[in-house]
Length: 328
Image 1 (tube, rainbow, N blue to C red):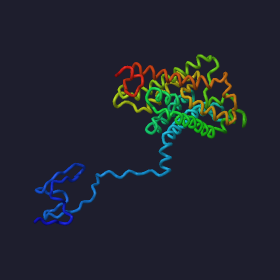
Image 2 (image 1 turned 135 degrees about the horizontal axis):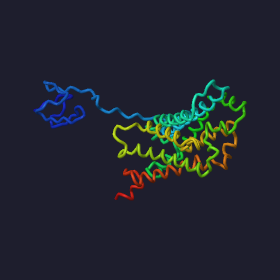
Image 3 (image 1 turned 180 degrees about the horizontal axis):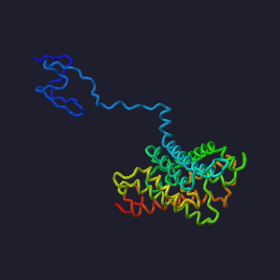
Image 4 (image 1 turned 90 degrees about the vertical axis):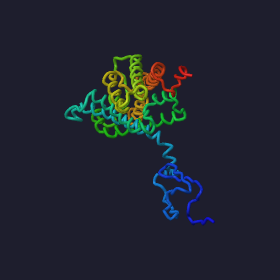
């Protein structure tokens, strides 16, 4: 007759979990948790056991739902704050009534926009992908499988981020703008250019369109190349650094003629802010609705052209819709 010990494990072959792996034993082996007197000793739960998943509250579900759009909002706001503030400081400080000596030039303006893009991408990249540009969002949806249902939400968040960032800069430089303009409530296009983009006088409409098209083409081309795992070298520069260098280079080399918007949200958001803050309809009527076809339409077309070129001739990733024509 075999006696039964309360709490003892069965004597038939059994498996125990030990350190995340299976431990097999039979009646001739001493299983974990059993002492030399054949008495079973209950074991505490292993520390390696995964914790139970946390269930979000209603507020947690709301936060999870808006987390990606908020990342785009914050990213664009950072881009616009550094860029517009750089333009404000460089130009406003040239007035002796504002500052004793100039505090910047075109180089510092380009540097500010480069810093803004790099830092905005750093804040949002791990959450939303760091598009912070409607033309980039449209490229990712058109060619790289980004969900179309997210496109309107991303674009709205990017536009709102542009308005919000410009509003903070305007509040910061409000008194200096009043001095520079010659009085409170006086608002002309010479200060509207701190926020939106306006082509220089000598360049015609076709030239301005091409400048924005080309700038966005180069920007998106660098984004696609840097994020291509088959192209980016191991241990290469982080994407935000490449973004900083690219936009800074565009400003220094191509930006003077049109202000290098290369991003519809970066121009339209601040432009809306200026129309509300006192500049009025002149920010839209400049050169027969220049704001639509140059800083909005041209970046969209330039980005699409860059994506078509890169995915047709260089990219081999399976997520590209173009590559479906090259592989079975």
